[in-house]
Length: 241
Image (cartoon, rainbow, N blue to C red; front, side, top):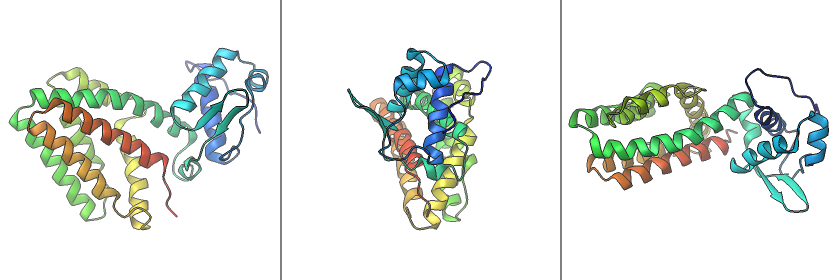
């Protein structure tokens, strides 16, 4: 096990340690049920302080990748992250998880405000993106552009440009996240492991549209939050063979 951190400018030590631990999980060095090195071991091996180690482990806990048992240690939970390594780097996985936390908060509120403020023309843009996505899926194509227009269309319907800019400026990039998620879903559909994934996505989108159309803020917020949580669940439970 390589116990070294490669210094990165402008990246907190806790984030670097977090990324290293994710790397071990997706590479299979740490498997389900394995106990990760103790706090003391991580401090000594990486030459970092206890607060740095605790912050890194807390992030893993929030991402449902590890569980800490008081007085025993921290253990790796069941995860298909190792399957993700076939398609993306550990750094991409880390960035997706961080971006997703922001997207859940940002897009849930965006949907709620869109329900309150949207114009008929803005609603039509969202519906058009949904139809384009449905057509792409029917033809077994990725639908990154339509998915992007759906989410950006909702942000634009808040009539607050800051929502649009924040969504566009996520550090890993909205399109890249969508591309990774859709490619994983496409492989699951084609391999018949999860043949209904695309249908589920469209149904989740439709619930959001319906809530925005009838201008029900709470329903829109809930529907978007549910959709975002399901996206994370689908990425984290990827299995393509």
